[in-house]
Length: 125
Image (cartoon, rainbow, N blue to C red; front, side):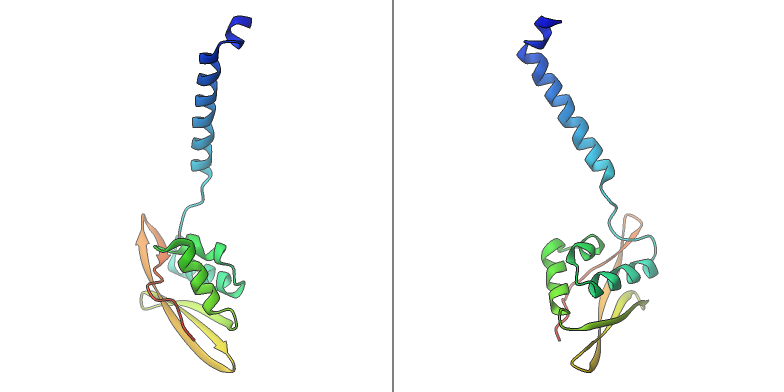
């Protein structure tokens, strides 16, 4: 036993197995992207934009990741998000800025059976 504890190959093997186990656990615990229904997706997108939290918006995007999420949230920084609904294949977000009501559309896609938004164009206002 003492000989095994001082053997370098033993420790390299233990490290490699431990590392693979850790990676497997992290991948299994990784949250799924998107949502199971378009209405649930619309609610989550609206909540993320109301909170101005790009971390909540990022896993709901089909493409673009953190940069698109930040850009989308920053474009609504000085606006009050009224509501978001799923309509005609898109999440329609209604907002008010400086007393003017407006809306923008985020097209919805299905990836691996889950609904995500594709923020092809970030809103300008």
